[in-house]
Length: 369
Image 1: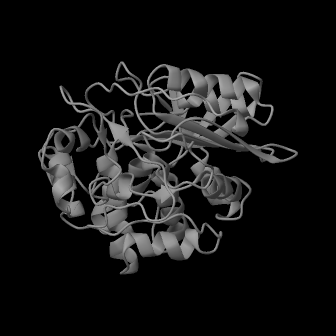
Image 2: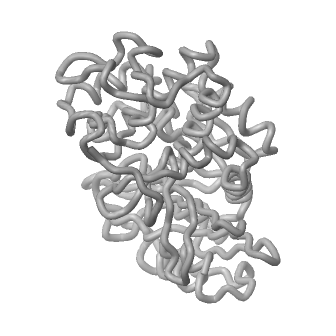
């Protein structure tokens, strides 16, 4: 069994996108450098290595600041701005985990109850037993549940129609379990789709409504949305996302079927909104102290540590921060906050020329330090 601890590094992702990308570098825009030359240099390197654009939005002890490089839309010289909306992928998991823990706070869900209690018959067959997998294990990726993402990324028609969450769960469960519940750690987007269904079963409301009612509106996150199935657009000012599928040229992939990532990563947001959210979450404005402690209790996770939908990051300058990454075709992001309230959001709107994702954590830790 995994042991719980409270310790170091995390980065989560919606998916590791397949294939290579070759983008046209754009020059850095010095108008957006407010003296943070070390952070500017990191994101300039991303663009020099082929990313279309990058932006860092941060708040330190004294003020808010941002730096940008490259472009938010190929063919223009317009950099990504702090309030440009982007798909933040697995940053969504922090919101889903917070909603689930609010339901625990309200007495409607128990962390160590089996998922079968809330979604009977959903997790069954092919070695799975919903009476043996708990809500906590879904939140912490210790359920052993296989991931659905590689299958749908390999489907050329995946972005052309809405998906029911039950379909995504079935795809994940078509693969055998990674391990017995509680006996390991493996990142599972399938588990978060199940959590979304648990929220809906318990409340009788759509997951997006619960996220909006419990988090987005009370915290004043006016540029954050959980899009409905079929709504592929990013509404309002936004950065375009770019991706190259194997053997294909770079494509504008901004429009995405949101039911495809669903509860695992469909949120659209901005730097100011996400940093406001993580500051509120870690300062105790969202959860009771005991449930925040549960959220921040981590397990070892293949070289880093993971709590309930959030991870603890060791900073090279000392101390720690808490946050999450998000990776999906078109956008790589990272959000983090320190114990004293310093916060950062990083976005890169495409892969590097060799197909790798930009090291968004490097930009985040440079900004926090």
